[in-house]
Image (cartoon, rainbow, N blue to C red):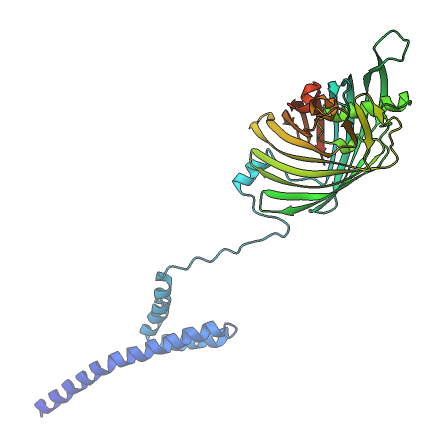
Length: 407
C-alpha cells in the first residue's frame, strides 16, 4: 500500500514538472499579444489596465515577462540605421560656380548689356594721295564715342560717331611766296550703326557676325585737285584720320560715300587669356563725289562708283597682374584696297613713276596695347604702327587712348 502511494506521488510530480514549461510558453505568447494590442489601440487604457491586474493575480512570472525587453525590438536596435539620403535643393536661376570659373571672372567678368566707350587718336605724320604728288602732312585728334546694347544674349545694336580736328599742310595759293600753308579745320565722319549676332562655339568661344551701315554725312570734297579749299581741307583731314588709324576703319572717314560693311569674327576668352580674329569688307558707295580736274601731272584721276577695302586681323591680350588688374595686348591686321575710291592712271610706261598709284594695295599694321580694369571701367592705350607699305613711307602713325565701361 505504501509502495503504491509512493508511486502515485512520483507520477504526479513528474506530470507537474512536464506541464510547467508549456504554461510559461503560453504566458509568454499571451504577454506578447497583449503588448502588441496595447500599441495598436492606445486609447483603450482602462481595458489594458484591467488585463494587467488579472495577469499579475494569475502569475508573478507574467509581470516579469512584461517588463523584459522584446527580443524583436532588441534585434532591431542592434541593427545600425541606414543613413538617410540628403535631398538636393536646386534653386532656379542659379548655377554652381566652379573655382576655376570664379577665378576667371576676376579678369573676364560676365558680359553686361550696356557698353559705352570713348577714344582719342593722336595722329601725326603724313597720308598718301592718289597720284605722284607729295604726301599730305599734318597732325590731328580724332575722337570716337559710342556704345552698344544687348537686346538679348545673342543680338546687339551699336553706334559709333567719329569727329576729327587738326592742322593740315596744303599747297599755298599762287603768289603767296610759300610752298605750303597750315590750315586748321575740323570734320565729322560717318556715324556707323552696327547690328551684331553672336553664335556660340563652346563655353568660352563665340562667333560674332553682322552688318554695319554708315550714315553718309562725312565732311569733305574728294575732288582734291578742284577749287573748293574748305571742302578739300576737310577731305584731307578725314584721309589723315584714316591713315593714322592704320586703314582699319576707313568706312568712318569716307566723304561722299555710303558705307555698308558685313563682318565676321571669333572671340575666345578663358581665365587670363583673350584671343580674337576678324574679317570685314567695307563697301563704299558713291553718293555724289566727282572729279572735276581729271587730268593732272603724270596721269589721270577717275572716281569709282564703288570702293572696297578688305581688312583681316588677329590679336589678343593677357592679364599679367591680378591687383591691380593689368593686361598687355597686341593686334595685327592687313588692309587691302581692293577697289580704290579714286584711281590714278599714270601716263608713264614705268609703274615706278606712278607715285601714289603704287600697284601694291596691301598694308600691314601692328598695334601693341596696355590697359587695366577698375570695376566696370577699362582704360587702355595703344600705338598704331604701319609695317612697310604706303603708310610707312608717309610716316603715318597714331597714339590711341580709350576707355570702356560696362553696366
